[in-house]
Image (cartoon, rainbow, N blue to C red; front, side):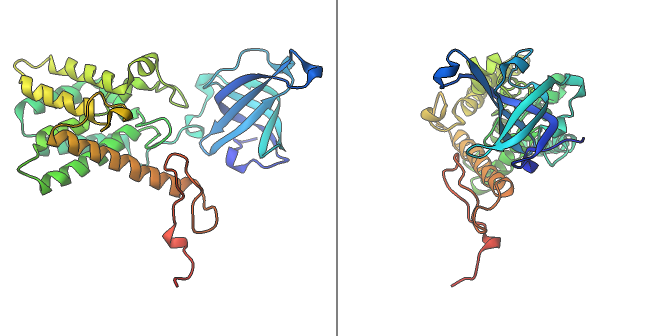
Amino acid sequence: MGKQFVRDLKVGSYVQSQFFVADVAELPYSSPGRSGESFLKITLGDISGTIKGMIWDRSIVHEPIYVDDVLYICGEVKDYFGPQLNISSYEKVEREKIKRSYFQQVSARDPEEMWRELQQITATAVKDNYLAALLDRFFADTELSARFKLAPAARVIHHNYLGGLLEHTLEVITICRHAATLYPRQLNESLLVSGAIFHDLGKIEEYNLESLSFQQTDRGRLLGHIAIGLELLQQKISEIIGFPRGLKMELEHIILSHHGEKEWGSPEIPQTFEAFTLFHADLLSARLKQFAQVMGNSGAADGAWTKRDRFLKRSIFLAGEAGEIM
């Protein structure tokens, strides 16, 4: 039997297929007759969505189940406040036998083509010699660039797929460069584009790129991508003799303030024109991608509207599906 995707599972479906473990919890039975006994509640997923999985009989659990395991599951879909996959048996799938395209989305754009575009933009837009030298070192670092091409921009909310970070970075640069044409005297395009390239650099180490659900690394959980990105930037700057202190400080400020508000995770709020522009470009790219992903993935709830999205806190009107205009 080929891969059975979550989106195709219906009540009554008999399942024999692979799914990755997005979450797992051991819970006690509430029945007094089963006091001291427990069952496993597992969130199972693939590229098409997630489904609740239940292991009621703990005797079939022959080894611990962890987040990001891929399991070959046998069971049946039942209805209990929605579809629920009751698992009768499972086996862990070896990593080398996993087809990642079943479980992880990939950018629609080719990462090598996006990388070449990024280099071409840099050659055109970054005229400052020190920033150009900094970016030359960035592009020449094969290990760093390989991770940058692969990394997501987020786990869940936007550009949350392989190549998402690079795609998001190009969107942010495009918005920033347009702003620079509107305010050519106030904005330093070389600094702005460089800040756009480096603003999310820390995400290459924040997420475990081998994880099917992009779990955070220990450094990601303890430091976060802003602190990690600042450290990576400073390492590269230290390789350039005579890099101006003021320029270094402005680039650092862009990274430290790019979330815009302290309550949104920024150590500082934007206090330069470039930092303020970058913050809004970053936010616009993220929000537009959220809208696009909800419109493309959630399905229409009543023909003209998407289902309510908990992150955007709204449903989205699908103009193309609208009824008669009054």
